[in-house]
Length: 279
Image 1 (cartoon, helix red, strand yellow):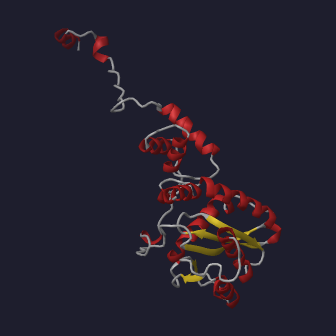
Image 2 (spheres, helix red, strand yellow; image 1 turned 90 degrees about the vertical axis):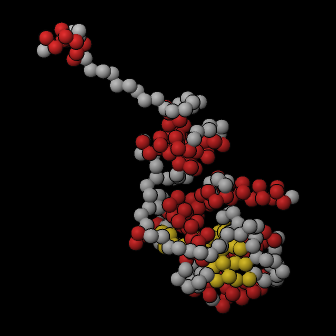
Image 3 (cartoon, one colour; image 1 turned 180 degrees about the horizontal axis):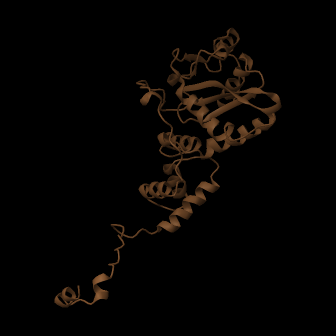
């Protein structure tokens, strides 16, 4: 070994020294917000958000509204490396249901949807949530909670929505409008009393196909959000307590919930942009 070192002109310390690993630098220009600060901003946004388990796109858009512009691939990478991404849902059967129809509208008050959802409320047992949503911007126009989810409870949010949008619930107030109400074939919505009330208001019905929940997919998707953000993470002791939590969530949802299809606007933001464009 000494002969080899003498031939190559190296000392033993030079021969055995380990070369330092070169730190790979990020290609391209140095970002204004470095990774340490970006991660801190992401964690702060997640911590202070009104909602739970939001994806990286929504986190990026909320930070952007506050003046922090960070590329989406960086937000995604930082959240992934630090286990901040929400868990993904497996697709049953290995494929998604294919739906060719379109249920979204290009203007408000063209298609509303209504449906009911059960939830547990402590001493009051199983209770019901009924809502009305606009297919244009996914805004919850009105809602109602009840212990008994019958046809009269199902009517209540529809009557509220009609009064809020058109000023009254007089006979034929909706006649002559393009508005239709989408519902499934639940017993509440197929009842004579419910149909008579819709006829009185002049509100046309658009029934979803049997065994095709995607036809009523707008409000079905909201129900999943409501379940994830309210029902699955809270334990309610009474219907009154649940009612208050739902009230707070729907207010936040309409004002702040970011929807990808609305160009990352909330329902109310998107409606205001539309009103300004047509004014």
